Image (cartoon, rainbow, N blue to C red; front, side, top):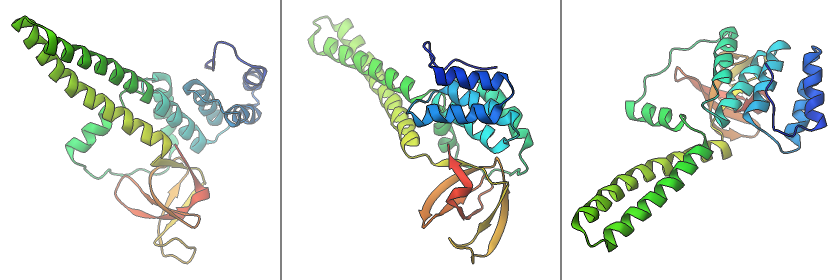
Length: 238
């Protein structure tokens, strides 16, 4: 199912959709990429690219684009459903390393809404906080003054949570820390060079966490805690 990029679709987007409908999925992807190169992106556009990639048997790119759609809009259920379906074709499976409950909870909380929604909620709560503080400072009735004080405290607490979540979401967009392996298979090495010891092999579609980069090599970590180095050309950030 295709999704409109915007209300006023341009000729390039219409062309991409026509190519998709004709079964020319790789040509459709080229046209979608031109839209991205022109500076436009949206959850719907990445969803279309994920669908076209899957139909052209590019599992790695399909997973990548559905992940990108969800990064922009965590509530995009169609993209989430398709990601779960396509992920069944991944070769690699890992037993995740247990992490602290608080860290897991914070990550889950941040992923509930997009950066835009967190920012809007933070602005709204700041207005509520400011209004409550003014009521507390200038009201002469003790009951209203107490209500203003309590509301200001609650508003401050919620404002700090939403602001922190908005900042965290923004950082993930500006400095992505996850990626998808796109090469059919890639050897993970102990050091950033072809002479490094072979540690293990990853396959197309595997999700990785990105650490430091050195001279065209990227230090990565997988869910089971193993780390190593792969070439920067073997994956793309989400």
